[in-house]
Amino acid sequence: MSSNNTNLKELFLNGIVKENTIFKLALSLCPSIAVTNSLKNGIFMGLAVLFVQTMVNLTISLMRKVIQPKVRLPIFMLVISGWVTVTQLLMAAFVPDVYAKVGLYIALIVAFASILARAEMFASKNSILPSMADGLGMGVGFLFALTVISFFRELVGKGSLTVPTGLATQHVFTFINTKPLLIMILPAGGFLAVGILMALFNWIDAYMKKSAHASH
Amino acid sequence: MTGKDILKVTLNLVIVYLIGGFILAFVYANASPRVFKNNEEAEKKALKELVPDADANEKHDWAIHDKHSKYFIMKKGGDTIGYVIQSFGKGYSSYINTFIATDKDFVVQKINILGHGETPGLGDEIETDWFKNQFKGKSIEHLKVIKGDTKEDIQAISGATISSRAVTEDAVKNGVAFLIKTVNGAKEGGNADVKQQH
Image 1 (cartoon, rainbow over the protein chains, first blue to last red):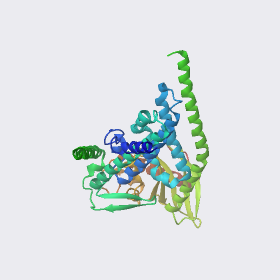
Image 2 (cartoon, rainbow over the protein chains, first blue to last red):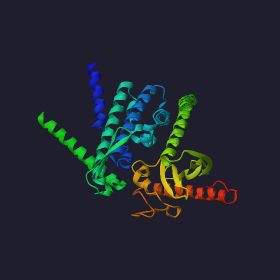
Image 3 (spheres, rainbow over the protein chains, first blue to last red):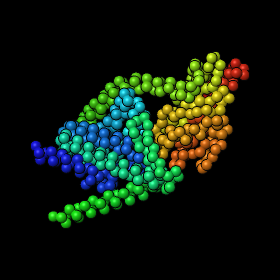
Image 4 (cartoon, rainbow over the protein chains, first blue to last red):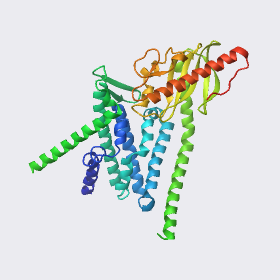
């Protein structure tokens, strides 16, 4: 049982550092550029992906024995778009205030490579608990990457930070009143930001591995 | 691949899609009445916010982009104090549902974006106050989008010119133009030309 738990923990951490969707696998770079020009956008998008990724992994894992391998991709797409649509409908019906804020992000998820990739690579071959751990880890890793990228871009691009405090208000912190580097919040800046942060992430990762080796 | 395999694979796909379809239909059937009610409430709230002085309104229908839409004659103590019109602008990736309040001379007082599916981070800046506040006091000839600084017209959002244009030159301008045509037509001859405008 204890080895089982460490396995789940490793699977969870795997998605955050070793196989981080954006910084390591370089998947789903489209949203990481399109919706990271403010911290608020990055966080909401990350949370939406975290939810859908976990639910899709869970569903695919449950269905893995009844799916014919030849038609697995259309079935994965159905599960992903199904979850996205159901989530959208339920949120619009029962929590319209939340939906008004995050509805835009959820609709985009259907086309994310990272979700389909985890369904294909992991959930279709593993049982429920590991699949959920993998989905959670991947989702948290994605949320982490988007938060870092959007924090960096908004700070240097707009000179401010929009922090979602609850759903009604946003606390806006402004440290400089001009837009110091406008290019960073435009799409071109997205490429720069993702590139710089990807290099930084991998450099830190390599450095930590090296020092871990040295201490042995 | 034998005939039996083909049958198996086909059946598998058909069954999974049928089940998926039924689940979606079930959720939609249960959720949509609530969504409809929520939207109506949001509209009522928007009307109140746009013209807080009004104590009554008269509702009419019109259409833009083949979408059913509404306009309201806002009244206070029996006198017309202004108009609110719901209009749609064809944006980058969606129709932008806009409410526009004008005074009785058709000068825009306030606009509100009720719904849209524009790109988060770029197009969704149409919801920000600085963009919406630009419309205050604009008459129809100043409803055009300029890239760069402007006080007379509407300044485009950087990175979202299409969305800015959709709101300004499609939704708001067509809405105001329709109001002018319809309300003035009704005043002049009584034979109102309320033909729906596209």
